[in-house]
Image 1 (tube, rainbow, N blue to C red):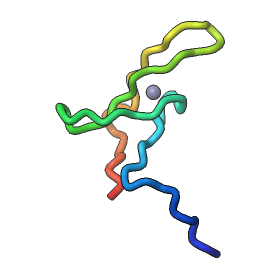
Image 2: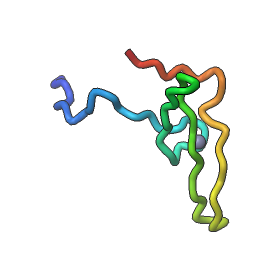
Image 3: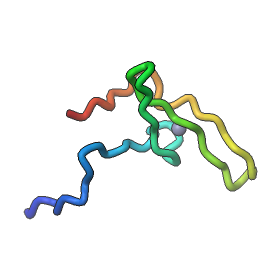
Image 4: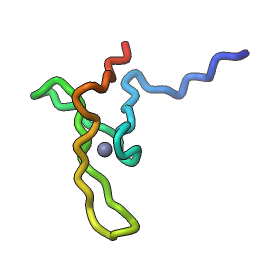
Length: 61
Ligand SMILES: [Zn+2]
């Protein structure tokens, strides 16, 4: 199997595992990722998200 051609940036932004809608933002303040929330099409409103949660391990490298 061929390795996937690299269009992957050096810092791939993980998608929030909780809502799976929004990419996480890395906070230099806390040193961890947080989900900025997302717009829910069904309710036509902006949803806050508490993701990714405390136990999520996103430290890829
Ligand atoms: Zn989220």
